[in-house]
Length: 265
Image 1 (spheres, helix red, strand yellow):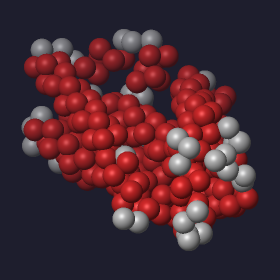
Image 2 (cartoon, one colour):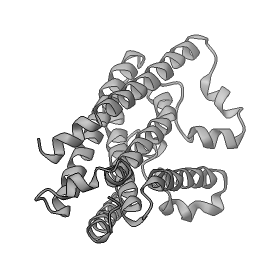
Image 3 (cartoon, one colour):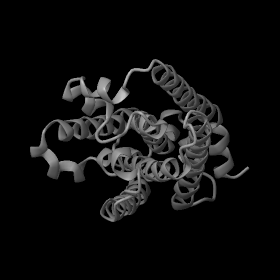
Image 4 (spheres, helix red, strand yellow):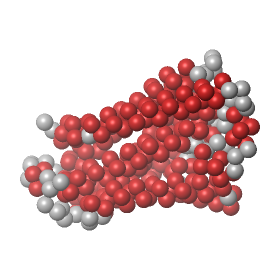
């Protein structure tokens, strides 16, 4: 069994749990939407009455909450947060777990180069992200369409999921680069998650204060927000290019640092 399939088997249970979690989140959220929309109360008026800080945290912006797609845009920020946490931990663990679990000696006595090892791990991680994203996409389209009352939602959901996948890959390499650079494998996941939370909090601060607008390039959570990409807005080229540059740079850092590091056997 090659490294790719070993990694896929190792993360099988984790992927199942995360997939069930994202399915439950979407299902429960759209169920709540059905209840609110049937109450006769204007959801847009209800949300506008909330404090600006709460609106920023919920990522409401210009979304039309009277539509199923608009309500989905609100919960999308939580889908992204869940997906990026999964990706970050995955990226950190593909590097750190061999040293943490004391299996590095077994792995690296094999006639396989370090580059091939990390490439196989990356491919397995990407496969996990693709499966997670497909579960999210299919679940979202199925459940949002159920409550959309004839509104076409497939295109809006697909474009948001494309943005989410780019962010998943970005945080995957943030996690792997952090683990490759850090000498303590036990701290890799927590440090990577810390970076994620800081950038998420920064995105909220930007929504609360227009003076921080120029800092949006420092927070990936501002790259593909539902309120910007839905309703024909699409993915902005500048953020796609910036994401690709960061992904390539951090992947290079991962390979270089992993190849040079002294492993704790």
